[in-house]
Length: 252
Image 1 (cartoon, rainbow, N blue to C red):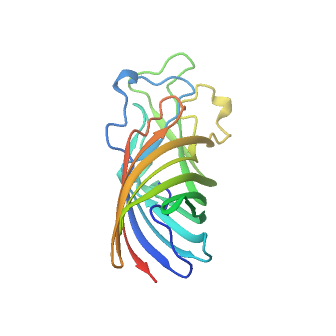
Image 2: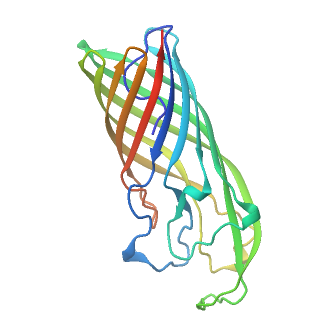
Image 3: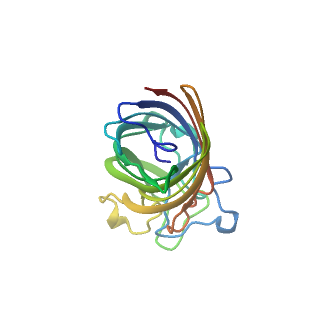
């Protein structure tokens, strides 16, 4: 989820929030595709992510801010059967940092607001590479012997852009919906061609999403709940429906 959702900030006001993303609400493994094929991705998808953000209104229609997210490898599940665990001494968590900007434009009256949102996030993504010494291009034995080769680590810029439409039902109560897209990371997790071993297989792909939620503010306390449906087209990667919860403080 974008870090900055919900109602607009007035010039000179700010908001500090903590966020939990339930990235997965169901099973990661698709029981219809238990087997893995040459070229399939092999990734760990976080079941939960934690985040924090601080944003401020710097002009009547403009906000800027910064955000941080963290996901532990122990909170993640493999996307397919056969994805090997990271070695015990090579466990890698994921950290994401970013800056963002948001505009707020009232439509008709002050109850309806259109908000374009842009985040530029950077994340360090790790990949453990293993070599099967008992496999061939056509055969993977049930007792295949894998040897850890190396750990690849790359920093990716992962922009997240969204268009949010929000409506103030009552003073302090607001509903919102948004359409957005962001970059994520995939790889080639199962490769039968040993000549590809020296090359990293990490690469970007686009994830679209639809989200809807509700925000309530009582004095300086703000809380929101958001449902998000990701849309991705990478075979064997399925994020599934997501829920995100935010609590925060509004600062005038």
